[in-house]
Image (cartoon, rainbow, N blue to C red; front, side, top):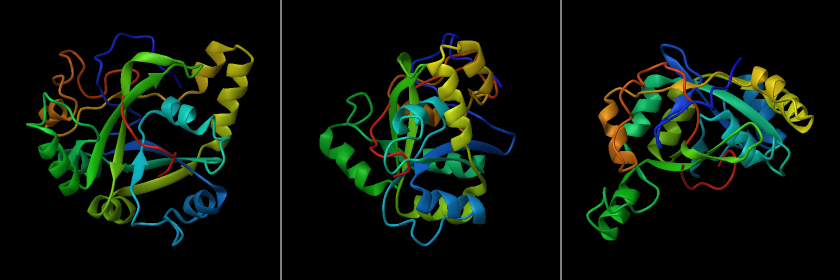
Length: 230
C-alpha cells in the first residue's frame, strides 16, 4: 500500500480509501465499543446515537487524533466501510462547523444552518507519516440526528479493527523507516462526491482543482471535532 502525501494538492480536498460503491472512514473507541462493533459488524447498544459522531477518511489524521491508538478512550481504531451514497448524502446535508464569511451571510445565518443540519464539515491540517502538519487539509465529518441513524443502520458495509496496523506503522515511524511506514499505509485517492460542486460551499474556496478527478492519487486536509469516535 502507498501513501501519496508528497504530491501537490488543492488546500481542501477529500481523499479516501475507496471502491466504486464504498469508501472507508476511521473512528477510534475504547475496547468496550470497538471490539463488539468489529465482531458483530454493528454498533452495540452502548454506542450512543444521541451524540454527534465524527468520521475521518484520513488514516494519518486518525493516527494523529488517537496518538497511534494509544490515547485513553481511543485504544482501538476501526476502519469502517460505508456506502458512497450515504457519505454523499451527509455532505449534501452538511454545513461548516465554523463561520465563514464567503459562505454565510452573517453569523446568525451560520448558526441557523448549524441547527438545521444533521452533518458538519470541518477541515484540519493533514498529517505526514510522522504526524507533522501539512499545508493542506483533511476532512472530518460530524454526524448527528438523522445522519447518525442512517450511518449506523443504512450506510455501514463492514468494520475492521486496524489497531494492529496502527501500531505496526508507528513502530516503523519510531525506527525512522519512512519507506517501511509508507508501505503499510492505506492507499487514499481523491474522492469527488456525486454533484461535487457542493463541496465548494463546504470550504468557501472553490471546488477541487481541475485534473484531480475521482480515484486519482492524492494525499491530506482542515476542521473541529474533539474525540476519535465521537
